[in-house]
Length: 108
Image (cartoon, rainbow, N blue to C red; front, top):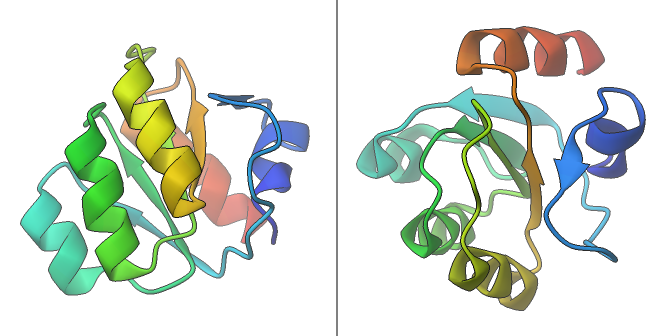
């Protein structure tokens, strides 16, 4: 699937326009960034509540294509700037991580 499917098929709100429409081949749900770096696959989407720029840095190192911030958490501007710089698509949803993981799995 493509990152844009998160918006068009699931209704997740992009944090910025003209985000990269990266390929997504897997998903990973975690709030522990060391877990993400050690276990997430490249071209995956990270499902998390960690709304800060360190999450983007971690995803960049792991080759993650997109991030979904769950539970309606606000995304700070410095996180958006970092995602743009690293070409990582960034979305937000009011869904919790369990529901988000279920919906993303259905798309994959």
